[in-house]
Amino acid sequence: MPSHSSLHWLSLVGTIWLQTINGPNSDFPVYSSQLKDLKHISQVQLNFLAFASDAGKLFGWFSGLAAIYLPLWSVAVIGAVFGLIGYGFQFLFLDNSGLSYWHLFVLTALAGNGICWINTVCYLICIRNFPSDSRVAVGISTSYVGLSAKIYTTVADAIFPPKKILNAKTYLLLNAVMPMLITSIVAPFLRAIETTVETRTDSAFLVMFAITLATGVCAVVGSIGSGLNGLSSREHMLSMGVLLVLPLLVPVIVTFRESISKIWSEKREIRVHDVKLEEVESGEGVIEAEVKEQVIEVGRTEGSNEVGGLEMLRKLDFWLYFFSYMFSATLGLVFLNNLGQIAESRGLGETSTLVSLSSSFGFFGRLLPSFLDYYSSKSGYMISRPASMAALMAPMAGAFFLLLNPRTCFLYMSTGIIGACTGAITSIAVSATPELFGTKNFGVNHNIVVTNIPVGSFCFGYLAAFLYQQRAGGNHRCFGTGCYNTTFIIWGSVCSIAALLCTVLYTRSRSFARRPKN
Image (cartoon, rainbow, N blue to C red):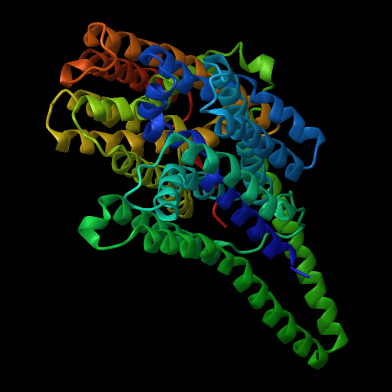
């Protein structure tokens, strides 16, 4: 039977696999243009479909309430079922004229809500099972959601013939089936595990970091294109699959190490006098008490300002946080949702490469905060989350202005920057919420915070679509850099405001939190 420590790591591996496939909406830019032609919808209507997935997050707080009363594995299964229904019905009836635009909207919103349920489970498992390293665990886990678009496009390219044009139904099928399949596999490990003694996690996290970095490098290499690196789609899928399985080495190594330690401990006990045994047991009791005290102290530090959902809405810090998030990370998501039309307007026929690139850089963006947290904690300091977010919003704003240059290299450069910064801010926000408002009501609080995503998606997405339609001059499509230039100026200016708001939030909170060193 696996030990408590190995079960902790198995639960983290489970969240990693869940997050890897928990971005089925991220492949929307790949097939959005075809969907636009197939259902004969306008650019504004297409952006509303992208908004529909985010609109499901308006009710994401239901998952936080459900997690209080239901087992975590069942919460994840509910989210996967929502996705199966939402994308499954679209796959089955997309060619049917009876499937109207509003049917698509409701089904997409249902699938989008399912994403919230799986996210809530992953966050709570990382926070509860790694109380003193929750930031690092959350960062590693959430970094993998940045690979979702890359995973879906890689699987689609590998399964179907390379010369065949992948249609919308291909991605709808994968979006429906993959989350349900992975959730069914990892469900037995999705639970909070109580432990009385905190074990050393340094070496295990280092192994996790190494595997995660290797996975990201593999994703970037694959995004460059098989023509440059000689790697076929199926070979790339196989290499990604192997790297996603490698995290299982950590619980296996932990179990093996504990078994060896137990054997040596039993051998030593045979040779030790009873009095010595009593001294050792007494010493272990003291150590255990000290560990318990340390864990409790860490919990007090991170959750010292416990704020409930309604009380949070009355705080100025919440609204600074809400709008700075909406004007930056949410704006980045809107950009990525429009990536298909942006690439098409500039004459780029292959959208999947650009989407894979943004996904790969988003992965590294999500991982970077976790990596910095791990090493900064060793020096006795934890960097303020609002300060980190504000620092990322400045280059993101600059990337929007870089898009005004018509050269293709600037499109790729800006896409990488925006993808990385969006991923980093999204990852940091998961830790910023408990830092600002406590851990007790995290499940509900963070789902309230992310309601900014559908609000921002609607406002910024509609603005982009409206300006696109104006530039198109009554045509179905718009071509040229002028299609989005005004939009990029507005988005860059809004992102600059986000940096200012987050700086104000930072000045209202402490810049660094001193942590007692052992």
